[in-house]
Image 1 (cartoon, one colour):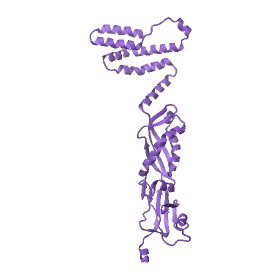
Image 2 (cartoon, helix red, strand yellow):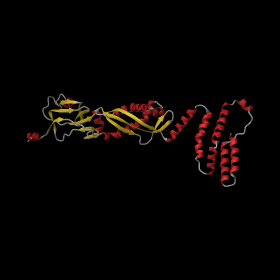
Image 3 (spheres, one colour):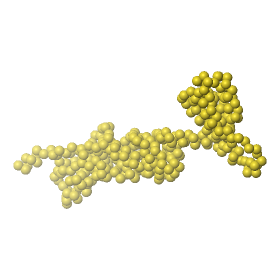
Image 4 (tube, helix red, strand yellow):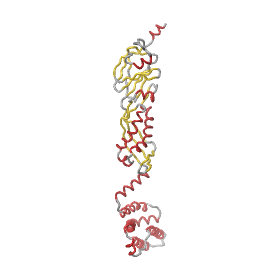
Length: 345
């Protein structure tokens, strides 16, 4: 009876994996109730690794090549099975194949803005995205830590884990680099290098080698972008306070002109007639005199009445309302407006 059972058994003579381009990282050879024939052959193709597992314990690992399965080629399994001499009977063992091909163009990105510490701004909330590539480098570690005994393990199965590691380490990468965020944002290659430095050891903990990572875009929140725009504007005028005040006035003019209501419309007309330029000149002159005048010289200067530009604008708005109600004629309004604008100049 035992002889008949032995005859009915199916034995495996060739173990191999014809890999397909479907994103498979790990594949378990289908053993079913079959056993591996003594002296059978194992074929491991380029970009593959084969792993023998005996009763849940990793045994022998094979790189690319063709092997005849004997006690000489299976030393760890031989020790686990207590084969003290050349075995002649078939045996059972789980065999896993791993693809070591580079998995390219894997996408990463920040679904929500993340907060990173920065020595210039204190804290910055940013969005970023790019791509990366990796490969299975340590099949033994990958099998014990990630793929386990699953029949098949794919790139899609690993995607969430790797993205999580990447997003988790963005803040650490920027902090560890010591490079200001503005410099990293302007140099995306430098940003990618900082990320790679942080991620390589994290990936290696699960048997993965990070081959490449790119940063394709970094975007800032709108409020921070406005601050940077103002900083750029200040840099353009340098230390010339007169030019700076003119720059600020030029920035404010559109806001005055866009205001709704009759008074605001009149204010916009006044700006169009040159009040905005005059206002910028007065403010710049007053600020320059305050910074440069010496106390002694100030005592020699006659007292000059200070005109508040905001009061002038308020008066213009009220006059505009009176004109719109028919209390003032167009000629009266124009005369008052010219008188007020002369006070500014």
